[in-house]
Image (tube, rainbow, N blue to C red):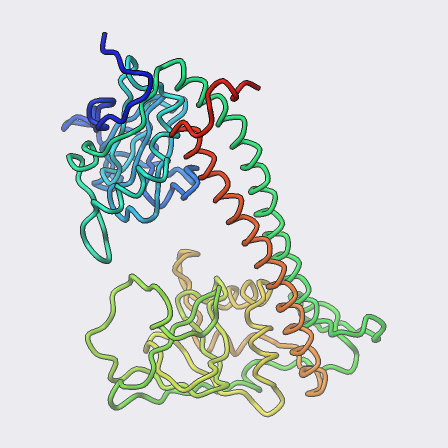
Length: 416
């Protein structure tokens, strides 16, 4: 049996095997597998949203087999630090070839300890430093195997693992609680905005039925108008394509494409794209059912597949931006979208024109805009504070792993 000194740094390939098992060449096309891709692993080492496929439909990268005690490390986009332990996996769990599957040699590397040794910052630094490529940095298995890991004695490894299991579990609970608070803040903000744009800000205002289920009761002095009465489609095209290219999403509304990470195909030329001006409503036709619409706040161009609308003088753009980005409005326009599959519905002008909108008096629209801006600022300040707290907890977690793995915390002090 191979032995180690009290503490040493060994190349990973001498402490574990890499990519030991893969699916055979001949696999039944109906074989059902569970699949982990790089996007399913977060920087904390947690695995989310495992996909299920028939082998025939699975990505070609679905090839690496795993078993309990393995650790998977992303060898592409290594800056994401997608490193996760595999605990009691089903027999049909398969991971992408974008991962290296590390399987500890049990006479050298304790499986409980391995997941921490491979998250130790010096090891992660080496992985990133040895990666090649600018926009898509990657490391090959050979270079990964040459990186050294901390290898104390097996009893010490177990003591370190037990200690870190206890300590990091407490930190992880705090992180999840703060993440839950951020989600609750977002839900509260969305509910307040939805109520403000449909019911107004005066809780004592007399109400009347709007006549439309998605709107419900509204203040009695408000109007309800069909979109066709207050929106007009605009279809003017760029002669050069030199204007600022804008994009529309359900998360950020209308923004500059240059400020977003967009991986979809980009046309060779934007000549002939649709022009839009500040205060135009822009709707992403294909993703309107998700709420991908909003007001443009600058001059620019958008995809010819989008639709651009001018507002009547009865509408203030900020109010419309808030209204159309509510989930209830997205659900309503879905009823008038065309398509066989829910994920392929398209909202054309004739469909949008069938929707009815609440129209408050201009002064109330302005008050609602100011109220929403204030709520968003307060919510953002709280979210920023929570995110900062989460980052500090993650730094504490990383420092704790470093101290335990590298011997800065003496094993004899790690007892529960």
